[in-house]
Image 1 (tube, rainbow, N blue to C red):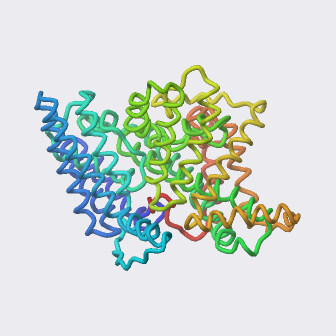
Image 2 (cartoon, one colour):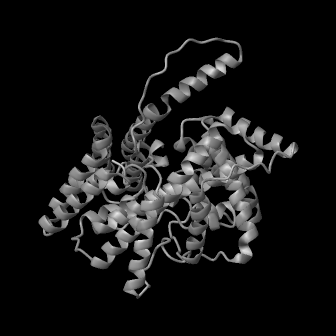
Image 3 (tube, one colour):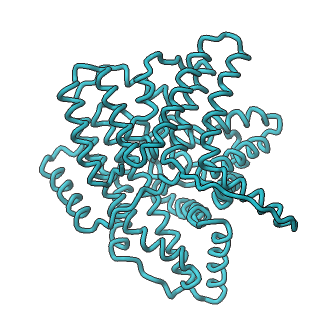
Length: 483
């Protein structure tokens, strides 16, 4: 079920009314309702894959209990290995099986040894990269004695499958989200209104910006040999705003829906295109993933390589970003995308006296970027856009050819014959930049909690809804559903 679908806007009010009007005095019943609603939400896409979520839930629920009750470190490690191997095995089979087989065969073919093989038609379950990381972090935190396991299976299952963030995050830690299932929740009108407002802002970014950008970006990347280098560069820039509006729009809707039910999610985006270097970017972009990788991948590796000082830090960070690339997609283009981000950290690491983390779990809403930082912001944005070529291309060969087409165009001065995007793109991307720049110290672009005028707030709502209705593009699936 998509957030931007008619089905969801029938589903949500039904669950909301049952939750607050029928079951408002029964905490466990509310949790059970959310669990059922979450399974319906996910099963609307393909009910068969509910079994994978249930399996992951059952495994980590029992593993968590076993890790906590055993004092023997060796036994705890065995149970932890079960969780890690099960979740990574699940992810590996459904997401990477054909990628590894194809890569293995290509390697042998490159040295002249022809191999016959069969690939499997494996459907990638929506959200598997997100919920496997979420459940795995639960077991990892218990093994580190940072968290006590719950004995309430319904609450734990709801934590794993909670529908607002099930299929594309944020990747919530048990330490933040799980305790909220045990606290009595009271309806708060102001929080609910703020949630609905954040949902509206997310829908605007998704339907008006991301979906309108999609047709232009698809055309440029599919037919790059037909266009000038100027058009290709513009296509990459438009994709940068497409993926940001799409993914952060999904996150805004997810956080907003959670607020309607009395839950608080961690912030996942902090105006990333106002970053002044690549390290700053990853403290603002997909924060729930970067903090997960920081805690469970980068930090252990950095400790392992600490004797190599800054070179060890770089190696740990580079490996972490290679893993980040592989997490995003089963293709060499994604691995190169991750590797480039790792390489861009070199000046950051070697120019600082101390480098300790990729991402900060403590997100300060104060954005210190000013117009004086504009050159740094442009340079960082250009670096990120270059990596997007590999992220958006269907494979590594196409990404390389796309880059070649840009370079050839620059050499032959084939740059100014630019295909102009749809007027809606030209109009609303600058609007997005302006709004977010003005609001950059707020939690999200349409945070109006300090606007005291009711009339002004409703005028803004009316304009936003009108823009969505009039200028919204044909509904598209969210980009991060493929990951």
